[in-house]
Image (cartoon, rainbow over all chains, first blue to last red; front, top):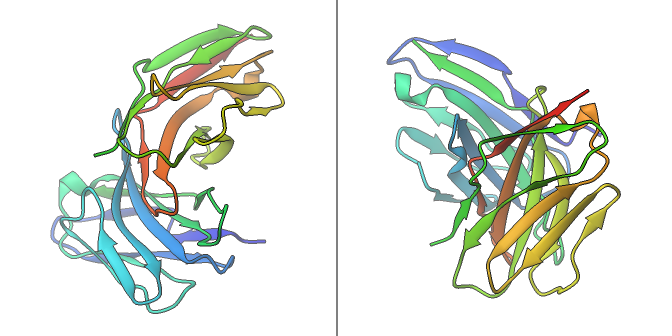
Length: 114
Length: 114
């Protein structure tokens, strides 16, 4: 039972480079989200999706793009990496049915932009 | 706007003793869920306990229990018989009913001493 899988686990980028953080879930969850975790600030929502083809911005969307072409996958794209994007990134999913309250998290990606 | 506040950045407790972590939140909505997530050094986000706002009874899960005070918008976590494996960051989180945004506090780092 894989749950939510994020790749890669670690990444170092140079300023200005682009990359995609991958997220896949095998629980047929409708809801998926991306968060970034910074020291002293908890987790902040970047983008989220309520189903295939539907995405929306969260609290800190600038510099990031997302798309949701399938229920399973929700990649996060960094367009032009900046040192301020150094962070730990988490993907999460949740079922859309009644009572499905818990969010399931991937193991995170530690990204360093130099 | 929804906000979650954890005012204790770091706490320590002796093994086998009891510790309480504090959390307050702000919302004008009536239907929502509250959570405590644990993040050990492995970085994995693990659900500890959840509380539905419409339930007056406080949630319990083995050694973990909450004190939910809806009128005061307070949601504290009590850990009884603390164990070394409880050492972790603990995040308080909030989500509205049938909504795909989680709001997190800044976290409390708990250190259980032998």
